[in-house]
Length: 329
Ligand SMILES: C[S@@+](CC[C@H](N)C(=O)[O-])C[C@H]1O[C@@H](n2cnc3c(N)ncnc32)[C@H](O)[C@@H]1O
Image (cartoon, rainbow, N blue to C red; front, side, top):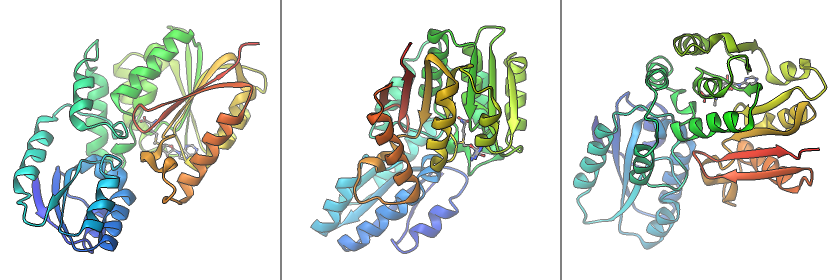
């Protein structure tokens, strides 16, 4: 746990290699251009920020800089406050660190976009039944073994939505694109009936070791099959006729359209495709952001919204969770 002052030019380097424990940062900013650069650095490291940074205090006397920063506060993965030049940021930073200490409950990386940490904590404190120890231990183990990737695990809020959707839809065959260490698959497998099947497509074998341990502990390992390799090739090997009741897509963003094209003909009428990261930290609705992933997600969201054969609901849960339903015949 530490709090430190960092210049705008040093910020990208610090965020690229953040310390293991929670940090709170004070960044003195002189101009609007510096504010833009700071915001760019914060957005460029959104997953690492979600993992390790409990707050950024931007200190500035410049009205232009303040306007830029206030425009972004709430749309960045960690709390950002803007303080006047004569303010002492130490109190706010200490408070953020105390909140970080209090937040001992392990969580996935995705806080809900635009939701204050306090409100997110309040919501999570009112989930029922309470947090599952195997899932929480899995997130902790992921954090220890893959500190840079831990932010990729879905949050408890999204996990609960996925499990409920599996249960409500009565799905018997679920497909997952992008499994990592198994957080989302654990939630979905627990919603399946005993003879239900979950087929996971994952490129990287290394994180699956943690997934398999958690699945075994939860007693759902026999429901899950992993297909190692590029998901597009694996999906194309599934029977061409409708055989999938529900799918969860959470892999490379540029591949989302391809996964949709491969999944839709294989989806039973009334079946669901649930897609993560469709808000992408708010970037999709921000004309100033123009990177490859944001463009891919905008195209994907636009395409879904224009398809008359689908029911589409983009929920602001976590980093955006879109539920697509193929209309019943
Ligand atoms: C965001 S993580 C998935 C997180 C997981 N759903 C969870 O909640 O724990 C994305 C995963 O997709 C995998 N991936 C990326 N591109 C892929 C591809 N073309 N085919 C299969 N898996 C891919 C990555 O290796 C990574 O493990």
